[in-house]
Structure formats: structure tokens, C-alpha cells
Length: 298
Length: 304
Image (tube, rainbow over all chains, first blue to last red; front, top):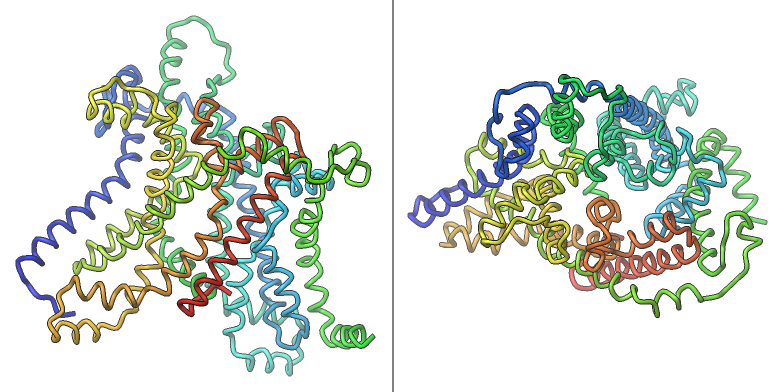
């Protein structure tokens, strides 16, 4: 591209670069503040009212030590990992076969089925009728309630179908001549050829599941199956006072620990978010390609 | 009879495909079409014990109660205002961000800024709201800064009716700016560079080039995104509102979907809640179809 160095252009460039750096700082600073607050001295965090750019007082991991003794958050973590992996398996399988079926040219009613599926994007039953269905199926308070009602999305199915349609028919035909059945073609030929798209869909499903809390609020009444986000909601939003279950005696050590309750909120944010923030720079290119695939056939 | 014959013939040819369809069709019937049928409880006095067949029919009573009740106007206004603010600020922000990034020639700088800007998207909604609560509490980072600038005493901003919309919109921009720009950045990279060269020779400056080449090139992407946004105008996510609001600020914060949630799951007015939800989905569908038709007529770009 031709770049002309007029004085106006230079001024624009300086302002533009400065503005973009400012945006980047805005994106980082809140998380940095929380990370620093989580290793600060709790008494100083209490009275501080500005951005914490450096640990206040002597840096320590006592907040995390306190959090380690709080079983709910680890149980939530375990459940979330279970829900994420379960959802990836269920949604991945269903989306794959839906995309496959809809892309079969020899299947005469594929467009009828596509219409049947797409209509749900236009109109849906709403919160209460869906809840009633889940309730009537006796799924409330089961692990299935977290996995089945959100198993498929029209959007992912369309992405999957588009990817499968791009595979040349000749590959499938030659396999058929060699005696391959429908399932062999699906898993041995189609899946390996569109595994990039499949991986992107799985990634979207996984991140969506990791963030999900609302279906737990609707479908789980008891705390023992709560995912991590619900536990975080109790800590961060409902300001649930954290009791780690240990007998509270009046000794000095315990008083010290009581002080660290202040840091709990920051520590729980760090513990639940930092793993994702460390991974995302490496998987972001898949997200970018996912957004692109989706936009072609929005 | 001909239809049945055709289906039977097709079935014989594609047995496995029909078998694979079973879970898909079943799932859609159970989790999408059965709830659609379940909407009839909006016209009943439904109780789970009596079921749909045993509950008495009341016609449009719940709709009348909603529209003549004290909250209808407040809910519609709040929902609409949050959507409008979203459309005015949250929609153009990623486009502007993408255009500004497009003016950067240093690849490493561009890539770094882009990667950093995606970060807030990977913070979960619950944690985002937790951060918002912490920053806007009395003595929080943002509350203190606001107090210092306006010279007032620090207060809990989330407890104040006047600030909810700002907090809601700004936090949405913060989370979605970078991620939302991906699609525009990609569209921008597809613009033919020869057009810029030709324009430069013709004496057009960067501003003119942006106006006459860059924007028209990405306009179809913008329109598609706009239609999708229009379709969800009244679909303000109850999730974020439910996490951020409190009874003290219902005046500006309560939206239709949060009202549906409260009526359904806190006071168990299932029928009334379904009626309000139905009103919401009907308006949504109408908006989506209207936006799509208007765009089809004027720009040849449409969703379907």
C-alpha cells in the first residue's frame, strides 16, 4: 500500500497508536489489578481505593492458602470439567451427524429437515415452557439437565453442514464402490476431512459450557451439582460469606485467616480465570477461523 | 398416498441416514417444539400438579393483566433503552476499532493489540459482573475515580438508578470490542489494495479512501451484523441483568426477561410469566423479519 508521509498523516498515526495502546491497557488493567490485589496484604486492600498496580504490603499467597481450604470451589471446578467434556462429546456427536445428514444429496427430505431445524432459530418456546419440559422428563437436579437441553445449536449445525458439503463427492463415491457403509464414510472419510471445522465447533461448545451458569440456576436446585460459575456467583455477586467448614476458634492463627477472607473474591477470580487467559492466545486463531466460517453462512 | 410411497422409497435407499435422523428430530421435537406447544399455558391458570390438560382456560387474562399492570411500560422502556444503547455504542465500536487497526502498518503492533483486545471476551460473564460489582462498590476503583472527578462522596454506583445503563453498556463494550472486531478485520483484509493505489493516484486522501472504498467494501458484513442485532432488540440477555441488578434499581434495570424469570421461578406465576415471555418472542420475531425485509429491499443483502 502506498503510504504518504504528510504531516497530517503523522499526527493521525501518533494519536491512533496512542489510542490503541490505551484500549489495550483498558483491557489488561482490571485483571492485573485483581491479580495484584489477590497477593496483597488484606488490610491494605480494604482501605485502598485506586488501581493496585503492585502488591500492597508484603506479597503473600495466604489468600490462596485460605481458598485451598474451601471445598466448594474445587467441587465446582470438578463439575465444570465434567460438564465441559460431557457437552463436547454429546454436542460434537449430534452436530456431526446432523451436519452429515443435512448434506446428503441422496436424502430426499434434507431440505424439509433443514427447515424443521432452522425454524427454531426464528421462534422459541421461552424460559418457562422449556423448564416444564425438562421437569416433566424428570431431568431436574440430574447431570443430564446440564448436558441435554443445550445439546444442539442451529448455528453449529449449519457450519458443520457447510464444511461437509465442501468435500468432493468423488471421495465418498469411491469409498462406496469399495463397499464402505454410511457410518464408515462418516467416521473414516468425512470426519477426518473436516476435522478443522469440527475442532472449532468443539472449542466454541467448550468455552460456552465453561461460562454457563444460567441453566444451572434453572435446572439445579441443590448445590452439590453446581458448576464453578454458580459457586463464583455466590462468592462474587451474592457476597456469600465464605466459611471453609473448619471449626472457628478464637486463636490467633484463625484470626489471621479471617483477615484473608477479604482476598477470597480476588483469589477466586484468579483461580477460575487465569487458566483460560493463559490458554487463549494459543487457541485464538481457531476462534478467528470459527467466526469466519460462521459469517460465510450466517 | 404418493407422499407415503416416496418416503418409503427414500427410506429403503437411505436406511442409515433415517436412523441417524432419529436423535436429531427427537431432540428438536422435545426441546424446541414441545416448549412451543407449551406456550398454551399462557392462556391458562396453569399449575404443574394439574398439568396442561387439567388447568382451566382463562383466555387473554394474563396479557391484559400485564399490559394494564404498573410494570409493563417500565419493562418495555428499560428493555428497549438497553437495546438502543447497545445498538448506538456497542455495535459501531468494533467497526471503529477495526478501522483504526487497519491504519496500523506495523504488523507486530497490530497483532499484539488484537490479541490483548480479545482477552476480556474469555472472562466469564459471572466473573465480569463480579469485577463490575467490585469496581463500582463504594470505595471501588471506578466509584472512587468518579467521586474524585465530580467532587462528590464515593457511593455504590450499582445501587444508583442513574448509572445502571451506563455500567451495563460500558461493560458490554469492554467485553465485546476486540472479539466483535474479528469479523470486520477479516472483511477489511479482503479489500483489494489496487483500489487504494488508484485512489491515491486520483488524489484521494486517507479519509476519502476510508469513506469511499473501505466502508462500502465492508458494508455487506455490517448489514448482516445489523440484521442479527435487530432481531434480538428485545432479547436483552436476562443473564447479565440478573447478575447486576437489585430491587433498589428495578426502575431502570428490570427488563422483560428478568421479569419473566422472577415471575416464573421466584413467585411461580408460570402462566403469567409465559404470557410475558410470549409477548417478548413475538416482538423479537417480528423485528427480525422486518429488518430482514427492509434490508432485502434496499440493499440486496439479507440473512434469508
